[in-house]
Image 1: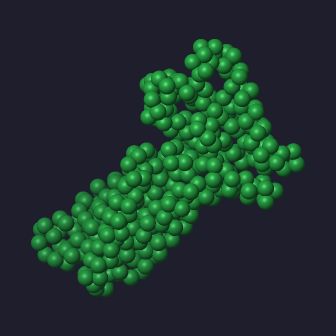
Image 2: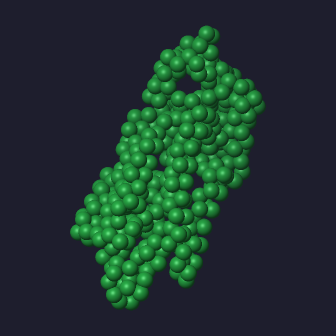
Image 3: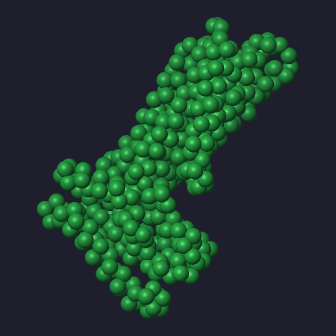
Length: 390
């Protein structure tokens, strides 16, 4: 019931039907995507929370309408608790969206973004707790009628600020990553904005919950469309994306990039010693480290087996070398802190993609050659690892 003018009446049957459609839509989306959501990584957990809050809104919204203006103690309790939940769930949906979107696009939530979403969540909870004693966001009168208070606009501001924040994340990522990043952010933003505006202007038109469900459907549709470009094991981009990007790169000669090829050292021994299931886990861990370091500076691709390619939107050798150093440092940190039975080490080769000096094939061959030079140096200094890998 956020964003309503109380002088108008509402059609409870229409509200029930609208929210029922939202419940059915989210149920179908959940069960049709359960294969994707079984992996409880941070990105999927954020997506599950987004779906949960959207689902709960569709259930609670018609309930608070049903008890609005109805006398009785328990109707009063349901109205207060239900409206409090709607305020909290709508902000939490926006927080979950920022978590998901940041991790999906860049592999991580930056410290600044974490501080923003955490502050928003804590302030929202504090306002709702205070509202139980001193109505500042909404009130339920003695006649059990919901009344909006000035604090309501704090939640409106938070919802749209977080939505705007995700759009800023997207365009900043596109700027930093060039052509390398794509996700149709408008698929989520448009229904939420339209629903919020409509429900704010017209009391009795309950559409924010179902519009959030439609937004979730848009997100899942976007993810489905991305599947052709995603590696099913690691979630990184795959060879199809590499071909797609390099084709566009050749046609768009204004852009400059650097390529980094990475190969896990002694990976065969991990499979031989611990089995392929553990080997897959090692690949997932390695992919997560590389993606976290690269962030919004480029794209990470699983090239083949235990080989990865990073496309950086920069030809500055200081940036390239810093990226390489950070990848090695985080691999070492993983080995010291993860408790995994395997040790991860990586060989790296890099060079600038120059239209005049390299064709696409020559570019791939060059970073591959430089990576193997690094690998030979690694095995020269690790004779035992070299022996096991043969």
